[in-house]
Amino acid sequence: MTTTPYSARLVGAVVLAMTLIVGGDAAATVLTGAGFPQTFVAWTRFALAALLLAPLCGLMRADLAYLTDWRLYLRAALIVGGIVCILTALKTEPLANVFAGFFVGPVVSYFLSALLLRERITLLRTCLLLVSFAGVLLVVRPGFGMTTGMGFAMLAGFFHGSYLVATRWLAGGFRPRFLLFSQLLIGAVLLSPFAVAPIPDMTLPYLGLITISALGSAGGNLLLVLVNRNTPAGVVAPLIYSQLLAAMAIGWLVFGQWPDGLSLIGLVIIMTAGASSVWFAGRGR
Image 1 (cartoon, rainbow, N blue to C red):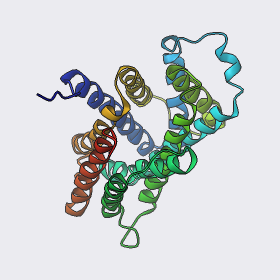
Image 2: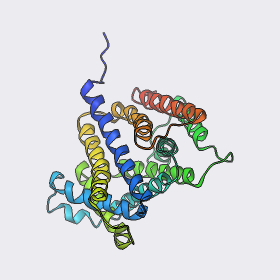
Image 3: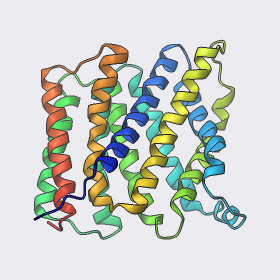
């Protein structure tokens, strides 16, 4: 009798994490639509999350010395670039389509890891990732009405894929919670010049949306860190594709958006091929 590594608790935790992240981006979309610059929204996300999560990250005095490591700044700059780009894309494009373009990230991560970290690649997984990338192209449609917003969505994916490689590069030298806090703190510092940008009058609903934006993103990522502490990455990774389902559901409920036929086909291809790729990778194929 075979056993599955997927418990209801594990699936629920990862799906909740993905929903929190997409919900945070939906709140950010409302803010940018109200006139808040995407760079300001990104800064509030990093700064507020760093402030609220600091007590949970188990920081020690010895950690302060690590904050001079240039590699942490490179990693933080990559995630900052990814978030600014995805918030820029969300100003003009449907939520589900943006996340479809964003999922070029696993393809970038796969090939960069092979090139820079000498990680093993296989023919089967390469083919499945290329099929997933074809699904991205169905949504993005380069040369056939591709918009600037979808270009920013793909650029966000390139940044995030590179960020994942940087995370693997540094994972052996730093605690996971310190890596999370360092990217929040350094990200807030890098974006601090935009904290004084002209913004609409601050109201209680806007403050609530800023809080949802920050806590949704930070809470989702912290939950993933906690899940990965006790669960192999190969088990968790296929569930990450539930983010596309969350984006479709939240896009429809909050903004009344639903992908057109071609985009819907592309989304199904991305989820099926991408999750299959990670599933086979977890079995060494």
